[in-house]
Length: 336
Image (cartoon, rainbow, N blue to C red; front, side, top):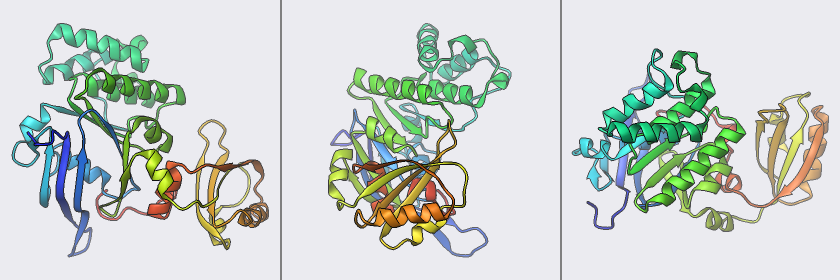
């Protein structure tokens, strides 16, 4: 075990990949030093191609590091992978939930047996997890008949069937509606609180999710940790640049031109899942710039439905360090 009792500890962790159609290698992780304490929910934020998936694959023994060292639950992922696997589990958004001919209940029981969970304990745990995720009514439905959202709920429940010491949640609420996502976050909070040694490493594209769940957050890009602290401390650490949040109608031209407005620091936008309206976040050098932004929006034929000035958020912190929002990502470079 590690002397400091860390759940996860990496030292100069490096991973190289051969670039597609090129002779040179791409460095996905560049000497990452990271410590995740036992009992914490730790967030890992980064755009596609930042190194998040590569880091998680190494920590879950699915990929070997090129150099450096990673310890999980005190065991070396490269030399003691079986000891690591007995103590962890992984939930990935969009992952295949299991075998289509099995029912939800049968799937949860099957995966519990892979970890040697006693049948009586497994049955009780499966019922509790199905209740949390809203799968009780689908307990006897075959996986092949489940919707995408239901399959993701099953992915989540499956990850907790072994009652792991450390669980890796990689986009766990991807594809879930607002209510289901809220239930999942509530369960994670309760699960960590029940035992002091339980640990979560979370990656998510939803900044509110990371802010709500995580005691500490790391921002990673190009294989390097750019910032690491509590969400509150990260928000205090950035320059006080004005941030405006706008809701726009669906009709009109592309918003790409907003980035060319003088005084605009960054622009990110998403589509509201229910209404389809565009939710726009603009960081500017000073308040006066928002007038020029509104003028450009009008010129693009877009209607402003709502405008507010926002307090600093994790999204603001992310944009400050990475230079763009998660919704404005470029093509992936190398392995993500």
